[in-house]
Amino acid sequence: MRFVSLGLRRAATLAELLITLTVVAVIAGFAVVRIARLRDAMAAREAATEIEGGLGLARESAVAWRATVTLRLDTVQGRLDIRRGTALLRTRDLFGEYGVRLGGTRDSVVYDARGLGRGAANATLIVRRGVTADTIVVSRLGRVRR
Image 1 (cartoon, rainbow, N blue to C red):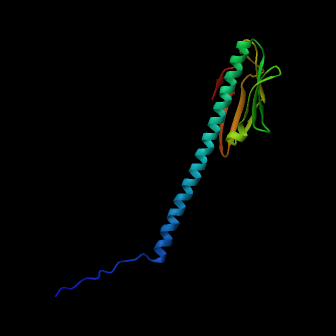
Image 2: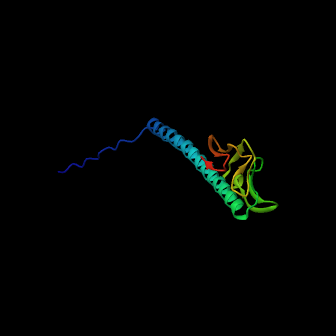
Image 3: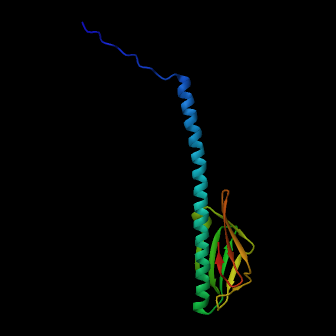
């Protein structure tokens, strides 16, 4: 005669399941916070790169047209405008695109026909989203560094 073993299967108790779910939830919570910070940092960096590109465009346009070109940051609406006189060369809605807030020591940087920054002596432009911030500094000569 053969005996068939019915091998009892061990099941998880309710307490074990709750502990496992709690640990998974805590780990997921940390991951969500880190991902949110990473997204904020990426958005601030991309917006700062756009501003940096706008400063380069403004400087190059001033030299090319031998005219005064102004880059203006509207800190209330989160916009970037580049103008030659009354002509609008470029506008960007940084708040709408990246969800960033803008600030700084000046709200505009003016380049003369030689590409030198007028009134831009160490202008600091700050791009913020969440707890992260990116800073751009424009020197007296109109050079940009981050």
